[in-house]
Length: 174
Image (cartoon, rainbow, N blue to C red):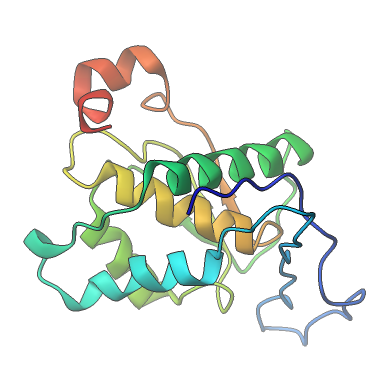
């Protein structure tokens, strides 16, 4: 998977009507286009990572090639840079914080709260360090951000900085 992705298309759905009161807002999904380059298959990556829930926590490791991880990070960075710094979000919304590389716990959060796009999420930072599956955690969160940028939000915590990552383990994990 040594492909590079240079951009995202507009959502594949027209302007959506509002959802019925008391239900989650209707979802919009970004669609990857092939602009002469191969695309990463976000659905395949999500399936691969989410299927790890069927394994015991000790067996929830997953190999993603460096090129794929780099592309996920670049695509997520592109989406973050296009969005406003001040998020004005509406309920219903699941708030989550301090995952700290606990990939198994992250999968349980989705099991209990609903997987995107059926539920909206705001993660409050500290995705890495301390836990043994920080890379899987970040890849899953970024993949959902890429697929559902209007309904899946990630804030930066103090552990998303180089100095803290070097102290608490994410730097070594990578």
